[in-house]
Amino acid sequence: MHELGMCEAIVEAALRRADGRPVRGMRVRVGGHPVDRGVIEQGVRVAALGTLAEGAGIDLVLEPLSVRCARCGAETPVDSALALAACPACGAVDVRTAGHEDVVLESITVDAPADEEVTP
Image (cartoon, rainbow, N blue to C red; front, side):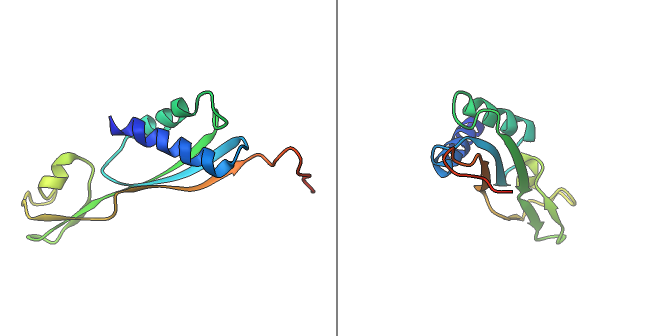
C-alpha cells in the first residue's frame, strides 16, 4: 500500500511549505504507474486529519507512463500492469516505458498570517 505513504508525504510537504499557516488547497502532479484518483484524494484527506491541512482541497494531475512497442511502433498510455509487459496494440513483449515516475507538490494555497493585513 504505497499510496498511503505517498499521501502522508504530500501532506507533510504541504505543511512544511505552509510554515504554520492553514493549508486550504494543494496541487499535486503524479507521474508513473496508474493510481486511483479516489484513493489518492481520500488518502490525502485522511493523512491531513488533525493537522493544519485538514479539509484542504486537492487538485490532482495524473500523468501515466506510456509504452512504445519496438515491433509495431504504437505508443500507448499504461492503464494496467499488463501494458507494462506487452503492447496493448499488437501483444508483442518488446516494449519500453516512457515518462517519469514522481510525485510533485506543485503549489499550495494557505491562509495569510493573522498579523498580515490583506488589502483589497
